[in-house]
Image (cartoon, rainbow, N blue to C red):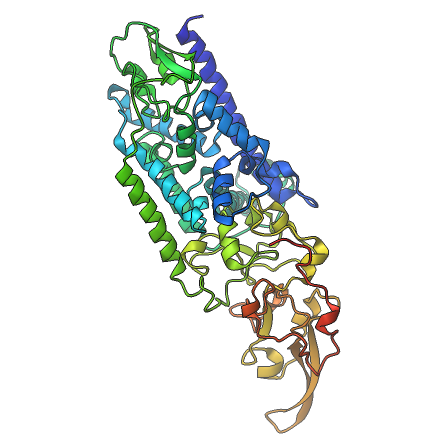
Length: 559
């Protein structure tokens, strides 16, 4: 079989593989929010096959997370043998970039000009160096740039909620308007379709996330960069691609010039990686995605992929990373860590009251060393309480998870967030352990609370408190009314020994603008310095058990 014919078969196999991996990614993403009970390990498959996340987390936290599996090693092995086929065949974000690049070529008719290799393609290797240096110094920021984390984050916060919003509102508009042609009504089609989507696709209530517009705008910008250069992100930015490129310097499967080249440039035009397939003996294996487009484009059979010895360099082209640029990258990583550490909150001199981490979160510094900002916990949260931070956790904590009680609350009988976290930044606590963890403390604003400010009865917060002994209780107090009369009003109190900061009281408060009872990060289990309530000093107004009777919430849990 001729090389061109064989290449066409390989290309179709690649396209089917790309489509299957993209469908699998979104299928596992959907299943993370649709399943109940113990989450299956396969839901984190794309994180498990990502060696970059393993390496960076190992460097930053000095421990190997449970995601270190044979799959991540297989990804590295595939790069050593076959080059960057993960980028060209498997990566779901790479597939999206590939589709955008194909649309760009068809719209702009750019097949008449070559897209040559640029020294700027080395920038992704310098980006990798920056992230590695930061990780070695204890700062984890790879999740901002890693393609798997990036796509999952944007899917959880914008793509999936946006699709649900569009489907539900479109179905509502059609139902209310009920347009039609004679006896044929649009609702005859829209309503069955909507019921199917509601029952099988959008199973949970619609989610909404703070800062989703910014996350979506950045994602759109990344995709639109393909209009400037095909696979722009993969060529110039992606640190995962850089790691695979370093492993693909001498692959077993190499591009070879097997015939007389006419220098027509068709292979270079079809190459999405600008890997220089048109220059004999200068093919760049560190850039090649293994897509086989170049072989299929050659009408003279001048090039083909062949199995070669990895002991021999595949071409005369070298990566040639600048030592000065690498030193500058290292200095940039050092400056980035210093910049992160300048924040007084990072130094634990102050504690942001709005920074309430999900249960099982490690102490802030250790938490940020592991957190990928991937959004898996946000997708899994059944109440939509887990939201991406902006700067509440400092620059280092951008897009890391926090609880916003006005949007949701921490379900007393749920511990999914810790179970789905791919790096155990949120520890996988047993349900009974999770119930004892304090993530914050509720307090009343007596200038707004109805029994205090307006002498009106209200028991909503107490009724919804999930603690069996009720962390919110009432005291009877006599008050003087405007006309001088007297009445007895039940005024609520919070028992700090029982309150875990779950936030359901704030979520259900009758004040919807600013709740009369609010949860802050005070009294959180993970930080001894942020506990204003001294252990052993129980309120004399309640008969709550002494703290010594309560087990350590993190007993037996590794830090």
